[in-house]
Image (cartoon, rainbow, N blue to C red; front, side, top):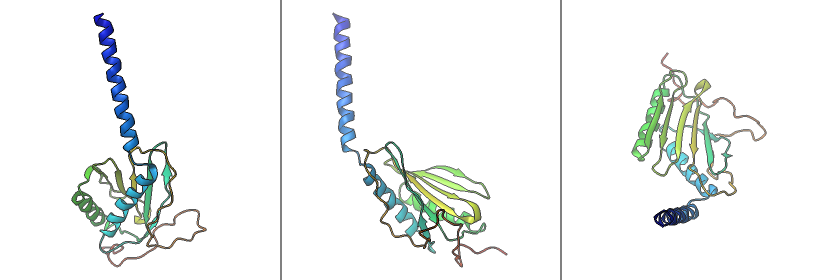
Length: 179
């Protein structure tokens, strides 16, 4: 009898937990709403960089329940200015309440990583020729279609180009070298 009651109690607890998970599932954002939130995160950080940099949309990718939005900086960030650029973004993310999760101090390809309180994962990586890549990965969201970003890019890209070119915009500040 005691074993039967214990089994019944465990079954009831499991049922209540799955009902709670179903309610949580229903209240989560869908993938489109998560993508819009990612755009807002990217828009804010890019607007917080002074002097401004020019950027283009990178490709959006979707998984089973997550979305990745990308922005590619078309302004050349010189080797001498990369630390300053990363510092501006680091300070902006910290001021925004994001937790800094990792730093790659590579001289050639530095990067910083952060997470928002609601589970969005952010990265800023510096690639070849000083090109900066921003990326936001969403937490798991309800499956839905994901539209293109409506944020207007600040750098022109040839619509027929298959790949985003290396940074091709000069900034008197960000592209400046120490020589």
